[in-house]
Length: 193
Length: 193
DNA sequence: ATTCCATCTTGTCATTGACAAGAATGCGCC
DNA sequence: GGCGCATTCTTGTCAATGACAAGATGGAAT
Image 1 (cartoon, rainbow over the protein chains, first blue to last red):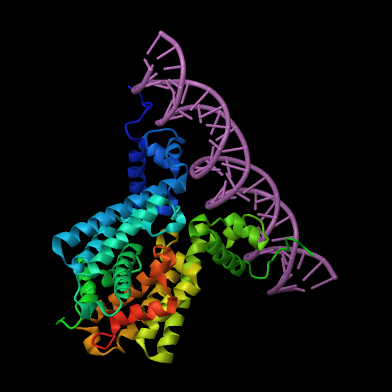
Image 2 (cartoon, helix red, strand yellow; image 1 turned 120 degrees about the vertical axis):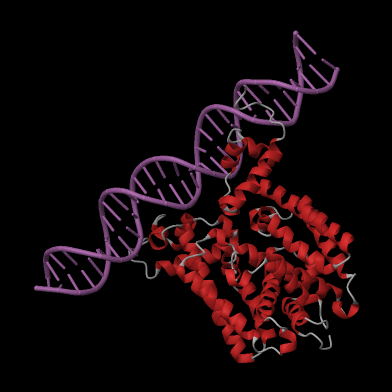
């Protein structure tokens, strides 16, 4: 029985998981590499070996988050064909993967220009933008880029307000219900509300 | 000439200003009390005397930000009477007071439940909500709270994406132009675009 | 079995946040 | 004018942290 066995099965994975958990508990700003090492049962310098430094670890976490988001959005779009559902899925993702999301959109915490993040973020953007094409022209308007930007802003803003605690309890209400209502507000122009 | 004179004219103010500047330079996560002390030309422990600790300082900065935001939105609404203008003003505020905004919506950095923050945030929310009443009923829909939430989500999301660097250069375009176009997307239902 | 290398440990240093204790300042007060 | 005295700031210190250097370990290839 080795309390600190060499060659941990998959230490990078364990550290990332510990990081996500720690973000939930103490927030991304209070994250400590040494605490993650303790959580994973390794020595204090082990995490840095795999990720270089703290920013490197969070960069990997952010890239992972954007990849998961892209996959999630793509899956929902293909399954439902509804862009409204994609918007709701964005919000759901943010709430369900709160730790990842909180890191993803705080680029001062990590190296936002690292190749894997840039690529993963582009994939997520593309998934969101692709959905715009499925909307009727009268909703999209003359410039699809504006529609995409508006859609992204709406769902992202909603998710951020929800996560960030800027909303009071009265303003929050039920998550899915509010998210759908807000999304409808943007995309159900001309239909009865 | 006293390089470190006692009774600095207004050290809390100087530290807050230094903090805003430092946030711009290194981001809110890299903020250091000792660095602020150096910027203000005082000893390393002086800032903590006025704000208790790091979180206390950022709490004050956030409260200040919400107060300024509330005042700004109120002024624009009273001057223009246009809720669309209020939305654009929200975005402009976020860009112009980037440092404050970056702290305001990262509640894990400060004590979000402190009385002054809660009050100032409520004032900003109220200013935003008040504007909803100026909109025609067919735009607001049956539930004004949803309209307010949607409006807030849109402008906040747009500002956050803009500040957070999640947008590529191609997606950004001109700030005011994009902000107006996006805001119109939400509030100019039925009108020609 | 020997070599080799990725993985992890141990040791160390500068920096930081927090706190305690002390010093300087200016104000009220006589 | 001088004396308390609370406020403001300084100095000193400690534990925790991130980063880095150097060494130990153990599996894999040969």
